[in-house]
Image 1 (cartoon, helix red, strand yellow):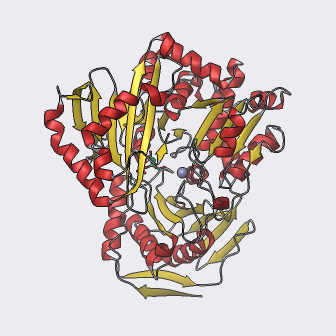
Image 2 (cartoon, protein in one colour; image 1 turned 180 degrees about the vertical axis):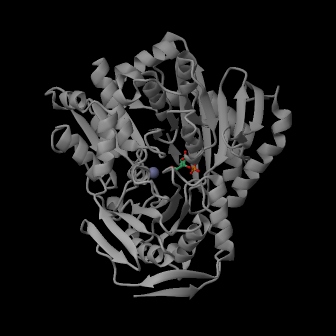
Image 3 (cartoon, protein in one colour; image 1 turned 90 degrees about the vertical axis):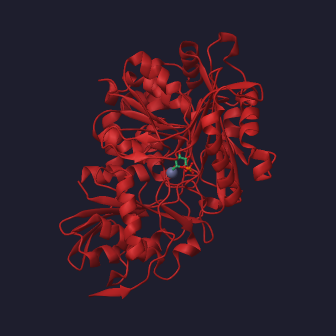
Length: 545
Ligand code: G1P
Ligand code: ZN
């Protein structure tokens, strides 16, 4: 067995975005492209000797081939031990769990999350640190800097390791353990939730649930926990087999892409009480009651309000956090619980420090992300189990729990409008113009709404003092409504403009309206203010959630 040192030159586009480096598969397959980025991660990590590295992915096209390369590179770089998910599978939350449990130095997770896969689809490489969470900004910057000065990478010349069987082998002195991707995660879930209560609920003859794994990574986890351990009817998990191209679908759990589940939940006379879906790599979740969509901003607020129903959270929450564009429903719960609520930039990496410092226990994003300090990633299946545990404890269906919540706290109507694949320079122009006008906006009326304050969101991490600027433009109106504009950091072609609108309503008679109609005047102001239609050339968004 020999280790090769391969000469290479930098690619200038390896700056990780909101969640790792995402590119089209053919870009990753360019000569040296993957290798350069992986070596840059290793270089940024420092001395690998004695260190453990966790490897796995969401099973999408190129997952196995990329893993085979990364394993040979990790061995050549001198890691002591690799923990690799069998068949190359590890959901993002499970990878985080394994890093923490085995005190690894970090993980490389191969995933482009909810983006479509396949030979011309998306691929991604994400590095997580020793706390199990996404690399901090500082580490991300270091990886990028390494990628800009790389001149060689190391790789072992070896047969491909068999990832299809659990077992141990050795390469260049590196111990390679192919592990069951599900067991450690299941053990963690059983330590947090009351599995007996959950099992009682799921075995009730009049309770039925449906979990849509979208042919992505959560299938094996959901089948193991929901059907095999908790006794839900076989067939509760649909689209449960991970496929390289997600069955040609878009593994994003929202009202548009989880169409089958949504139809089932909304069907007249249907008797499915609880529905859920998770994304490509298992960190997102969408939950629904019977004929009832639960907005992710409300979901995290409800979980926080009822955390004491769940054994793992009975001691209470240290604090909570939400990403800035997420509605303020969570803040209202935090106020009542007398705990702090932090507002962070979009992306999970900002929650990690708060969790490590034990400032928060629970957090969430409007983009179908909910999580807690049990790992350092958002966690789709965990959120579903949390909901089931609350339903079991309160003995109430999901829609009733949400309606009760609105009665108590008022309702934060929320929507996000995405304009996808727009011309990057028009997008930059739109954001640039908005930013220029910010200082003079307060007091102006836009489409009949008076602007109260407007700013470009920046964040100072309360734990390490690091700062993040340019994290989205926020406009607060005098009636309490809010609009946020930002450009996506996860796309792989053109630019995606995200426009978020929310409005808090307390009046009992106004709690059951359709969000798009309640928010119509706010969205009209959003358009007038930024000239969305003019600058994007679009008369409506591509995706509305
Ligand atoms: C999107 C979501 C964001 C989430 C990220 C990773 O990022 O908006 O909340 O953390 O995916 O799942 P964006 O494309 O908006 O940068
Ligand atoms: Zn994801």
